[in-house]
Image 1 (cartoon, helix red, strand yellow):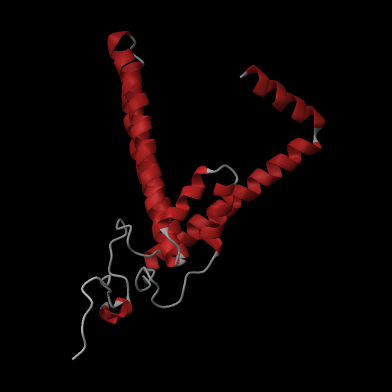
Image 2: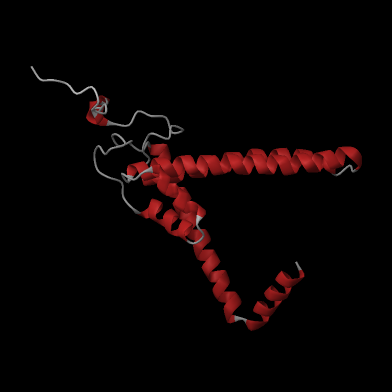
Length: 191
């Protein structure tokens, strides 16, 4: 008869999940996200949160356009709503980054690197480019990417790459044209 140690930390059989797949909901920070799932949910959350925020701000802006006390209160409400939706988007972004880090067999605490300027860009690229661990890791079994997540994630990646390419082209055009660079600098100084 084997003696059991009552002081030993409990362990779980991570492979005991049905069919060896992650059964957690997307909003659960204890699960895993593959690359396309990470991009799909980040795109979906940012579009929904920004759209709702924009619609509410437009409605309040119509009230604020009237001026007077109602306009001042609406302007304050717009600022508060913008702050709340920004915080909500930041929380969702961190939640999805934690799940993505779990897929890479890393602790969610690594997402604190997102607070460090320039390092946050490298962290974002790492989360997008690094493949997840195969099979079960210490955070559980892999989560399959449903078809809709693969499509939305692929569209999100393509649009992100196109935006990056447009930014690079715009910077090259500005830097190659000294007159445009001077106009840009004077516009920044007058702002």
